[in-house]
Length: 376
Image 1 (tube, helix red, strand yellow):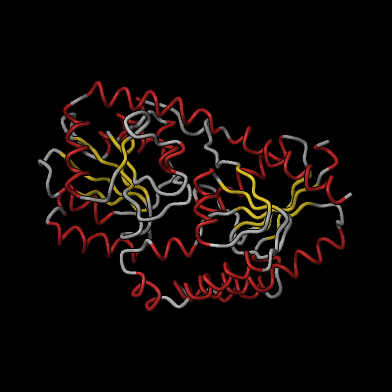
Image 2 (tube, rainbow, N blue to C red):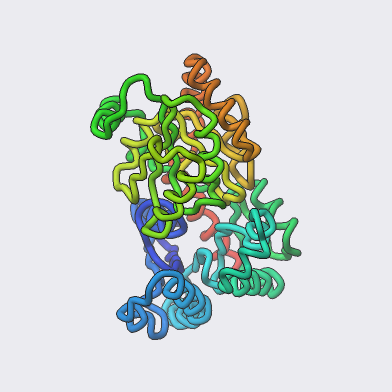
């Protein structure tokens, strides 16, 4: 059955690691392993995409142009590819409003609503208005045959924001268990290499946004904790680094924060820190949590969207309410109660084992086969 299916993923950028591009990369490799003919439509494949790439527009301007251009012209690329491959099933991610199966990587209406200051968010970046309009058209015009949500909670969130008439399916995101696993040796080497002592309690943070991801909450919590608590921050570019420094200075914790920038070996970081915190206002999935759990690291996170499906309070992690005081209290508890930390780490690792990418890819192949059968 799988050999008769061709799957075309439509994604603005295929990128290893996290995010939308990382999901597409992981699915592509597993589709090939399953014997499925898998191809892709990326930014360079749409009208004038390669030319716009050569312009290398900077920062937010470049991102805005890329998102809008891909949203407008990727449906044309899908139509042209479908003419050549009429039996193919198209799986669209995020920025494309065409395709048989749409993977819901986030409900922008909910993200704006849950932001610390929605009005300021919309005023500072007009791209948000375009994203809200695109999202409304996607669901109002019923542009896909099936919408994939990462969890029942994610589907409920979508239905709370939009009137959805399209059929929905639940397929979780995955974690690469061949990359993320407990590795005490790498963790200890990473700690020593970065100058941390055995008595330091290290809090990990992986992300590239200060407010939405809750980095400001982590820094305020750090200011309430003893000196042995330190924060390790991975991710982001120059603008993020400047925002991090300003936020740390306001909290008075600059000397206890280690900015790592973008790093390639996240496993060593996960295995080296004592806990990972993600007090986000909004997350569709929270992949970094699952990666840390697979490495045997306790996690603390806000129970938004799909996160409660795998971070269960007191069982596989701890839930946060974005209060710096609460975060500080729970981090102190983990530091003072190693048996609690160990129990959460072990349960979290078992939970992460359920989300192997191979199993996830098989669910997509089965769904694509079902959609293909309906068309014949």
